Amino acid sequence: ASVEVSRATRELCKKYDINLNDDVFIFGYSQGGHATLALQKLIENKHSEEFTIKYSIPMSGPYDLSGVQKERSLGMDEYSASFYIPYILLSYRTLYPNLNTYSVDEMFASPYRSIAEYFNGQYRADQINALLPNIPNKMLNSDFYESVMSNSKHPLSLALAENDLTDWAPSSPIHFYYCGGDKLVSPLNSKIAHQKMSALDGTQVDITEIHPTLDHQECFIPSFVKALQTFISKTVTC
Image (cartoon, rainbow, N blue to C red; front, side, top):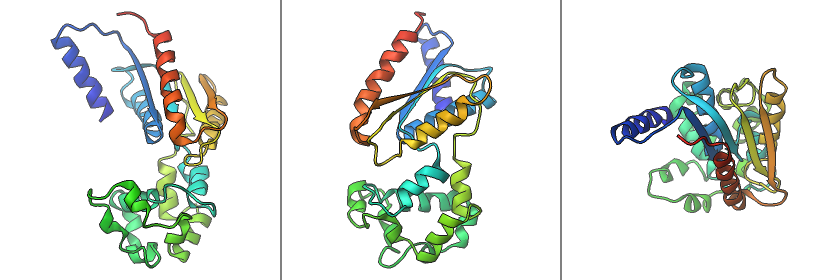
């Protein structure tokens, strides 16, 4: 979708005689951070002749879904966004047929087997969250949970791994932002992605801790402001 929007933007600017250069800056926060990396990978692999990414800033995103983020979301600690678990499980079932070998009753423990009814667009995330346990793994069937956590070949583990974004070599510069107090998206996502990417030949990958104690929601504004300042400093007037 982002590629299509970029194409449409170019057409619109051309129609109204708005000058553009070829530089593309991309950034995003949280799930948008993951989307930023996914977009960069897509452009560099399939659309490099059409778009040139000058700078990319993924911020506080879950890049290591099958690793540290799975442990953070499904471990034994409390998690403030339990609704993400059924959100991911139910949506992945529509995308990955192998997950359909498990019925909803086999995935979820009682009394959470009716949770799918609340993902109908009529309920806010906080309303769904209020129905769920603070330790998300408590909503899952114990056999399903143990299999997911112990088996890297489990359909859910494989689906999460397919969406990991830590093991590839970007050709355009990347600068990861995160906050050290993030309890929702583990800071290790950024650290692991930075460590793996920067170890590859020809990559330009930096990382900045925006603040040592800010949590996920609190980290957004200072990250957003710093990203804009960075882009402005690297912009060339058309």
